[in-house]
Structure formats: structure tokens, C-alpha cells
Length: 181
Image 1 (cartoon, rainbow, N blue to C red):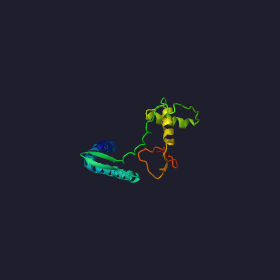
Image 2 (image 1 turned 180 degrees about the vertical axis):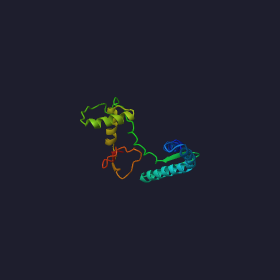
Image 3 (image 1 turned 90 degrees about the vertical axis):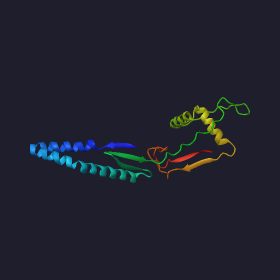
């Protein structure tokens, strides 16, 4: 819950009115002071209506969730209702480490040439799963080559991602999830 005190904005309006009245003399300033205090509730109401309208317009633009404005004493409270974050894909199941040898006791060495950007992303994912890049890749290949493995390729372009949580970087047409299950 976020709170906002609108008193500084009302006081700023009052100061501006008094500064404008100073040029007209002491009688105008005294009348303006009385008028400014009488306008206090109307100024607060106008600010609250403007803020409530802004919250309603923001809510209308959101694909889900919304923003509510509530009055608590002299403060406004904002309640932001966001949909729950989409669960992230679970890391691949941990398999034997690189140093662990398959049943026949041999280990093969290969050279894999991939774009530097793909390697950087793979290193980040491997680090998040707590594995080295090599172990992470071995586990992916092991999962893809096991008997009964299913290649999954899902188009997610019709699913809206809120709050900057788009795992695809907001690029239309690149919202696909693929892998082996």
C-alpha cells in the first residue's frame, strides 16, 4: 500500500494565491487568506478526483490487475493489484556431474560453436541452476536424448506479460518456449 499526503500541494496553491494577492495590497491579502482557507476542502477534493481519474485510466490500460485510490484521513492510499508473476520454468533435473562417467566408462569431447550471445545466456541459466556451463549442457542433452523425451515448442505470443516480467524481452514474434520434457 502506497500513501500520498496531498497537503503540500494544497499549501503550495495557498502560497501562490497569497503571493498573487500581495501585489494588490493588505486588504486583498487578508481577503485572499480567508478565501484560501475556505478553498482548502475544494482543492483537496479536486486533487483527489484528478488522482482517482488517473488511477482509473491506468487500470483501463492494464491487461489485468488495477490501481485503487482510497482516502485515509488526509492521506490517499494506493492499492496496486497485479496478477501473480508467471512461474519461471524449472531448471533441468540434476543429472550426474561432468566428472561422473556413463555406464560404459567413456567420455567424449566435442567442440560446439554457438553465437556469443547464446553462450552468455546459457552461462546465466547454468549459473542460476548452480551448475557449470558444461554440466548444464550435458544435462540438457541427456534430457533431449533419453528414451521417450518429448520436444516441446509453445507459442506464447498471445499471453500478456505485466510489469516488465516478459521473459522474452518484449519482442513480438519471439515469444516461444521450447525444450525437451
